[in-house]
Structures are given as structure tokens and as C-alpha cells.
Amino acid sequence: MLIVRAPLRVSFAGGGTDLPAYYDQYGGLVISTTVDRYVYAMIEVHNEAEVQIKSSDYRTFYQHEGNQPLDWQGELALPKAIVHHFGIVRGVKIFLASEVPPGTGLGSSSALTVALVKGLATLLGRRTTAADVAAAACYIEIEKLGMPIGRQDQYASAFGGLNAISFGASGTTVEPLNTSAEMLHELESRLLLFFTHSSHNSSDILRSQQAESGKAGGVVVELLHAIKQLACETRQVLEAGDVDALGDILHRSWCMKKQLAAGVTNAQIDA
Image (tube, rainbow, N blue to C red; front, top):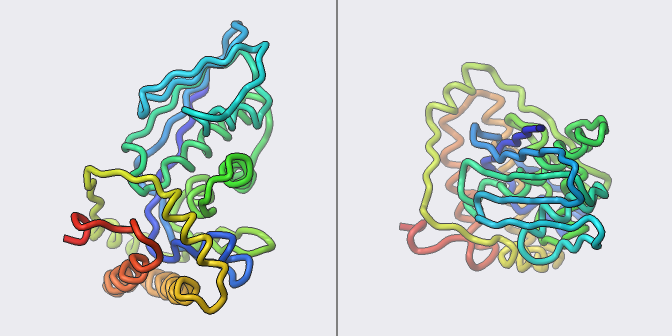
């Protein structure tokens, strides 16, 4: 049995600039870090003529008979599309589980994709780098499934750590921030992560934002320019060890983020 885990992430600044409608024209930048919460993929090889996929989070089971075409629509579309991507039609049991509920804004879907891509590639004897895994995850989610999402989550989960991730028409670059161990400890000691007991599907929000991001001179584009500038500031203050300045940047960024599309926030979160 193979057991693979991929970390979830927290995005400090730049979210939204990783959508192609924006970064293809202007370039994007996100500052994010992974955290010690994970999505797990457990892959077991067997001699039966089927593929089984179980998800503990969605309490769902899927079984594919090896003599039938694999359709990745409906429930468990994402893991089914990943299995199809690798051409696996029989002899594998997959169990998926996460340490946090889905839809909580920590990039769990992309972390699942990263974990399962890495696991199935390893099962097939394919050597992959973090960049290979992230690129494959992006292809499956964005191209194969047509999900209206960006690229930050896949690269954050595949590389891990505190990074500046740059996006452009020519590709994606991941650069670890040049920070001291003391600064990282200080940053960790000042961060709290809360569960709001609510979840959401970001597709509708991102689909609306994607459409507006391609309109030059529009309100959303101007907001994304400002959000990208705050990502540059975030990198500067963290590399300078100025943790005090991060709180103000997070506040300004959130105020802008709420203007990008309806549904970004709600009355409970605002309160």
C-alpha cells in the first residue's frame, strides 16, 4: 500500500491574481504557506478487475468495472479524472481522507489532486518533481475538468513551505521566501486559524471573477493590481522580519478581496 499526504495552505496575499484571465496579461503573484493539516490518499493494488474509490469526507464510494469506459462525471469526479489521466482501469483501491472538512478555503481539492497524482505516478514507477506534480494537478483540474480556479493551490501543496509564487503566460515560478528561523517562529506564534463551521463552493465566485478579470480597465482588474502590489509588500516585510506590518496588509487585502465578487464573505464572517 502507498500512503501519500499533501498539505493544505493559507494564502496571505495575491489571491485572485493566479487566474489566467489576469496573469496572462499582467502577471500574478501570491504569497502563501502550507500548514500542518493534510489530505491523504491511500492506494492499494489488488488482483480484481476493478477500480474502487472511497472518500471519507463525502462518505461516497465508486467502483469502476475494468471492461467499461471510465466516466469522470458526477460524484467523485476529481479522483475519477485523475485515475483516467493515468490510464488506470483495474487493480487499484483508493481511499481519500482530509484532516479538515472540504470547502473551508484551504485548498483541499488541489491538495487531494496533488496527493493522488504523486501516489499514482509513484505506483506506475514515474519519477516526478514538485513542478511536474503541480503542473499535472493544474491540467487535470483546470483543463480536463474545466474548473474555474487558479494555480496557486496546486503549486503551494506540491512544493510546501512559505513561498512567493509567480504566474505568467510563460509558466509558474516558486521561490521560497528568504526568511530567518526566528522570523518564522514569530510568525507562527502570532497566527490563529479558525473554523467558521461553514463551507462553500468557490466555483461560482471564481467564474464571475475570471470573467471580470479579462476586462481591461475594469474595477476587478484595478483591484487585482492593488492586491498584487500588496503581495509584493508582504514578501518585503516577511523577508525583512517585520511581522508587525503583516496584520495591516492582511486587513487591506481582505477589504479589497471582498469587492472582487459576491459571495466572498457573509454576515457571520464580517461580524
